[in-house]
Image (cartoon, rainbow, N blue to C red; front, top):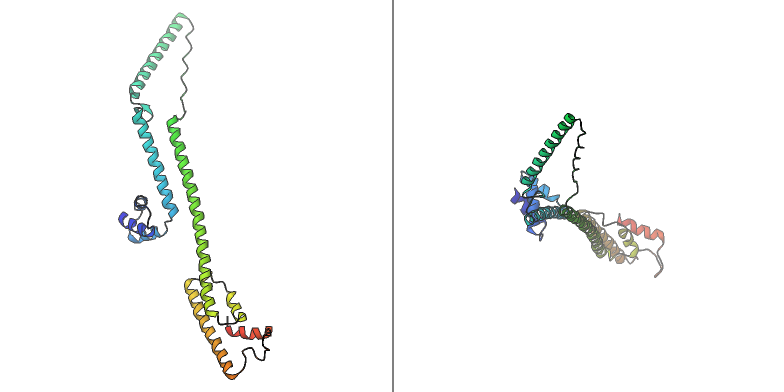
Length: 257
C-alpha cells in the first residue's frame, strides 16, 4: 500500500523530493488498507503537511545523531560514564560501610553513654540538565520555530496565489463577455457588466455566456429588421440626442436578464 500511496503523492506533488514523499507515504500506510482509502487520504494532503512531517523527521534524526556522537566521543552511555556501573557499585559499597560504621558508633555510644556523632546528611539529587542535552533541546526548539515561520510564509503565498488566480479568472471572463456584447450599445451592455462573474462555476459561466450570445443575436436580428423598414432602433430620436430613460428601459427589457 505504501507503493500506491507514494505513486499518488508523486503525481500530486510533482517535483517534490522523493525522500520527503516516501517518508510521508510510509506514515500514511500505517492506517490505510485499500486503494480507495489511499486516494481519499492523498487528496486531503497539503504541502504544509508534507513540510511539517519532513521538518519533524529531520529534528528527531538530528537529536538522535547528536546524542549518539556525543556519547561516542566522551565514552558515555545514557549520559553516564562507561564505567558508571563500577562507580555505582563502589559508591554503594562505601555507603554500606559508612552506615555500618555509624551503626557501630551509635551502639558504642549507647554502651559508653557518650553522644553519637551526627548522622551524615544524604546528598541531594542533582536535577540540573546536562549542557549537551540542553543544547539538543535548544536546537530542536529552533528547528520547530523555523518550520512554523516557513509554514506561515507558505500559507501567505498560497493566499496571494488564490487571490491572483481569482483576479485573472474575473478578467478572463470579463474579456469573453465583452467580446460577446461588444456590438451592443453602452446602455444595452450595462446590465451584463453588473453581473458578478467570479462567483460562478465554470459550468455556470459557460451556460450564462451561451444565453448571452443568444440574446445578443436576437437583439441584432431586431436591429436588422428595424433597419430594413427604415425605422431607427430607438424610434424617432433626433441624431446625437441622448435616449430617455423610458427608451433605454424598453431596449434593456428585451435582454431578459
